[in-house]
Structures are given as C-alpha cells and as structure tokens.
Amino acid sequence: MPDIVPLPADYAAWLAELKARIHAAQQQATLAVNRELVLLYWQIGRDILARQGMEGWGAKVIERLAQDLRSAFPDMKGFSPRNLKYMRAFAEAWPEMDFVQGVLAQLPWYHQLALLDKLNNTEERRWYAAKAIEHGWSRNVLVIQIETRLRERSGQAVTNFSQRLPAPMSDLARESLKDPYRLDFLGLGEEAQERALEDAIIQHITRFLLELGAGFAFVGRQVHLEVGGDDFFIDLLFYHLKLRCFVVVELKAGAFKPEHAGQLNFYLSAVDAQMRAEHDAPTIGLLLCKSRNKVVAEYALRDLSKPIGVAEYQLVEALPADLQSSLPSIEAIEQALADDIAMDDE
Image (cartoon, rainbow, N blue to C red):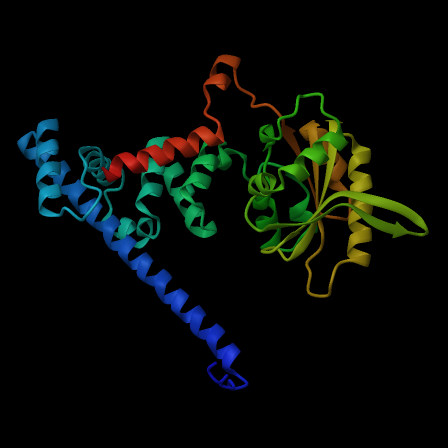
C-alpha cells in the first residue's frame, strides 16, 4: 500500500482556485470558438446575399454549395442547405457587422435561429438577444420567453415604486415585475382557490421561478411572522439577488381590493423589522390577483408607505380556443428544437 503523502495546509484552497481558473479558461475558449463561428456564418450569408443579388443565384446553387462545402470539410457540421439559408437570413436580418461581432456573437448559433424563426421585428430581436445575454438563457428558455411575450409584459404591473424606492432601484424593481403573469403551466382551472394556487406553485416552483424572472430565489411558503403575540403567515417569500431585498408574494383568487394592499403593507413592515438585514434593501410586495382595476390599484397604493406592485395572473392563455389549441406545449417545443439540431447536423 503506497505511503500517504501529507499535503500542504493550503493545498485544498489552491486546488479549488486552480479548478476555477481552468473552468474559466474553458468557458472563454468556448465563447471564442462560438464568436468566430457566428461571424463566419454571417460572412457566408452576406456573400450568398450579394451573389444572389448580382448573379441571381437560386436554390440549386445553394444545394450545390452545401454539397461542395461538406466535401471540402467533412468533419465540420453546419453546411446543410437549410443552414446555409439560415446564414443568408441571418445576414439579411443583421446587416451591421459591428453589431454582429460585438453583441450577437455572444449567443450560440441556435439562439440566433430562434430569434430569426420566432420574431419578425428587429427591435424585438435586439431586446430578446440582450436579455438572453444578460441572463444566460438557454435556447429553450429563450423560446419560452418569446412564446409567452415577455417583452410585452415586463414592467407592466401597477406599482408605487417611483415614490417608495430610490433611483435606480425603483426602475430595476419595476422592470423585475410583469403583468400579467402566465401560470397556465400549473394545470389549474379558472376557479382555483388560493391554497390550490399555492400548492401548485410549490409543485412547479422551478417553472414559477422562470416566470418570475431572473434573480428570484425561493425562501419559503406560509412563512410565519409573530407580531404582538398574534400569528401571521406569508403566502410566498422570495429574495431577489440583484435588488438585494426580500419579495413577499400574496395570492388572491378574486379581484383586487384596496384592503389587500393594506394587508400586504403590514406584512412588509413586519418582514423589514424582523427579517431584513442591515445590507438588505427595503422589502417589496407583489399582489397576484385574478383580476385588477388599474385605477383602483393606483389609488390603493398611492399613500401606502411600502413598495408594492399589483398584477394579474392567467391560469389559461387568453387566446381564442382554436388558436390556443394550436400552441405547442413546452415539451413539444423542446422536441422540435432537438429535431432542428439533428437536421442541421446531418
């Protein structure tokens, strides 16, 4: 049996640091390869566009080009006729090389295809590309965010943040909320009560965190507070890592009422007094209601002392039945994406 060599006292710390440096180098190498690949695809697409314009290239030429490139580079994937057409569409959608090289090259190629397939507007593509880079979304998450119209819903909750929070936290907090919240993944009917909502959210907490958005960390449900000898329970408690504050979420199965805001204001005071640490920002409240009158909500929040947002939730997608039934499930989207990748690798 070999002798056990005693290790220096700082060996474990040094090894951890070394592994972190190696991991960082691997990530940088992967990003560098992706950047070069995206730029290469853009250049190929730009050349195809130019030659089609000058020489009238058709589909047959694209097929021949794909065949010749595959023959010349048999170990390199991505030269199918379908992918070459995507390169052309990519260059057509993004004519500015500086933007492609400086921004879009941070996203993998299959993210680029999702932006091309799912969106027709340059401004929307820029917005979703920036969010995908900022939050490190996978392609599947990017597709889900586009399908659920995240851009249209972000920052739309009724809040008093501009009066109750300092800048720039007020803007960041407002953008962290949305309206409405899509909870159709819970599998509940429109008449679901608050406890059923809470139970389903806990069962699907990962998907609910995705719907809440980046930065939310789950702390607990029915969190106990004792105030003056009386017991109170918060429906859901989160901590926002970017805002550095607790977020209290209260669920209401009916329409918003002004007294709901007063109750939540009380909960926020208790959390600030009993749970908030010195370095934490003021606790934020979010009332999720089945429906809300915007004017009533604005009046209810106007003179409250704590930062509160009010938003609706949707248990069923608000689309016509024929269109709603045609929407793919998340599982179907993921399978379609896997099929796309397999086809492009052929």
